[in-house]
Length: 343
Image (cartoon, rainbow, N blue to C red; front, top):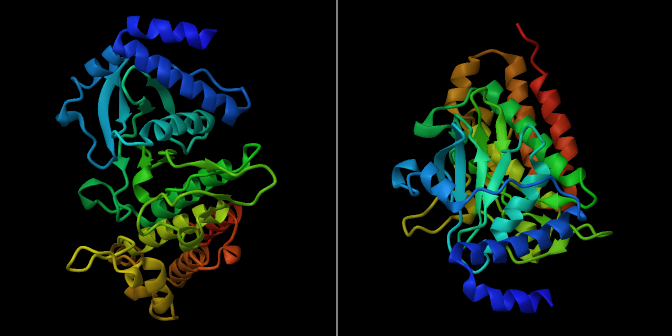
């Protein structure tokens, strides 16, 4: 009866109301399915509020590091991140998924807090807290290629690992991020990392260790097992996180492009590092800025680098069963962080 009533009312609604009705129905369905009917309230911003906050989404408000589009805006006298989606077949589902998982994860201190959303556009728009230092770039640094100190890199890795562990273990069924990469990590003014972008996240069905789905993610961070089999498990995130660790250690992107613009598979960081991880060669792959910061002759620091590399390589093992669980990765990073006694 309700559906018939909506059918007759739709022509009378403004386009914003139609968008809100359509997006709201989908959001409610996903919240019920993902949260067992239990969810924190989601603040709804109007389209007019977000247009004013971003000067009608003016290009000068764009946060360049984000994808697909994110704008810096001001709402209630504070800076916020307003994230939009590009029009695509699955864009609405991905935006809704991002909202649903962000709502569940927003209580974690290392997740970018979702302040609310707007359903009055063709695709839902998300409103997040602002992170002062911005997005990590593809080399694990800040804007303008500003390097992050080594100790801070370890702490960021540890805290992001905690957030991923929470994603895997805190809910009735494990949730897999599926697109972990440096540019889904933001830093606040205290260098506290904030994980974001759950658009590709997927839930493992009850009593199963994996779920099959089409391959989504970012070149260089995709688990080869997932690429070959389309099977997604917790170890899918472990692999991607291992590549992030290697980016932190090397200060390099995880792949190279040849002259024709194609990605060279053999140049992916995990495989390159397996060749160069022999004793005595680690200095040839570590970010020179780290070596400059640590100085020569510090055996504890050199051992810390080796331990960090060893963990990264175990995470990127080509056999998914041989990779550690995320909770053990987080514990190992705590040990690595504490391995050098403060002077």
